Image (cartoon, rainbow, N blue to C red):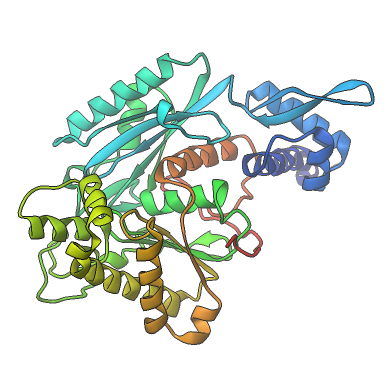
Length: 410
């Protein structure tokens, strides 16, 4: 009599093979079946069987490449873009958005609906539902799921935003669960920094990295650390709140209630506040960006202060975790080469030399929108295949496993 494990092994192997091909397709360009066999290490017959299964499930599409091989049109396989779609939701303190994308994760402004974040949770859900339904109605593709990126402390055990210092309307809420009830479509909740890690790992420069760190310096100051392909989450998934370490005990009051938190000094929001105080009038981040470009000398003191504290934050991460790469997600300092170089120079002054020599510091290439998309694509991939991919520490996921490392793109 055959052992029970022998009977389930073929099904498990099939699901592992499906997952392997989905990994390859998600992180690369459309490929022929022969190319997929070479890259994945699977045999051509196995690749053909797996592709047929994925085609039947609507996860991939096959189309004519326009090139001929041996007299026949060559066909390429890609993640579904015509027959299936997903939504990515990004909730932030000032502006939120909903974006639609194919399963390849490509996002565009044409498929994105932005709106000022409402003052109440009920209004926020109404707007998310409204924009989500609008984007779904514009496409003939079936919506396979929604990824919801949120700030604050996300307790993975409770499946809840337990505390959000910069957007208290999310306290003790789960917008993914509530939006799923309204739309009737599966939703997944993910902390915004973990979303950035997933987005960079799936669509950006961390595709082949084992070890890296992610700093989000936009509204708050969040940290994600990936070691051996697994995000360090802590007991309840709430690790990484470096922004709420005290940097100036006499500083301004933070949204968490403490004074002088690092995020009140080292972020885009901090620089906006300082420029606003200098001008003595309300200003948006776009207006601050324009002012810094047009009159940088007028705000050099504010730039210097934020650059100094941001350098301290980056040096702390390097000295503590020894990552091969740090990705920094921000706008006012990070996306401006001269200001970013100023930050890097100060990092060199604050970091242990042997650790800095092993670390590359670069801006992110992906976004929170792509992070939300990557989170729901991870859920879809897991639902259809064996649980073997790493970097799975998102809310409503299980602990992850470990990928391999390659050098970052300079």
